[in-house]
Length: 127
Picture 1 (cartoon, helix red, strand yellow):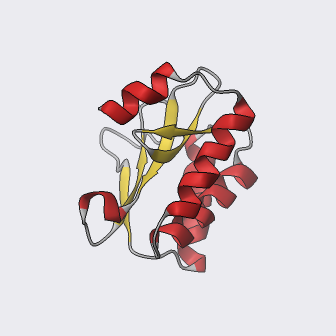
Picture 2 (tube, rainbow, N blue to C red):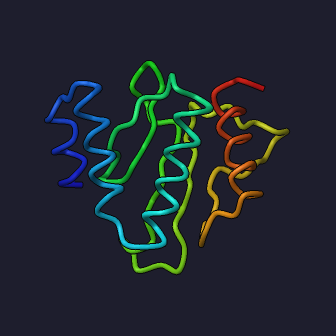
């Protein structure tokens, strides 16, 4: 909560927010670092309209209203065996009356990267 309060207090420019995300990714241990780098690359390639920012200290990507659409929660933070790629309400992943919004990731294969790219496209209304 303290991290989130600090983030809200510090209004950053887009460049500063991007640098904060890149610094956070660089500070992660493997395999979180590699996963976060790949997710960042995918998001920036597929949905450059999303703005990188930190969300509770984790790499996140927000829409034009500043609301997080997705974020990667590193496994080390909670001593879990996998990281989480989580999508929020602004993500347009609707599929009937029930659909997944969080994905466990141990490592990203090339097939997984394609799935993440499709999820990001769908989340941002590009499908």
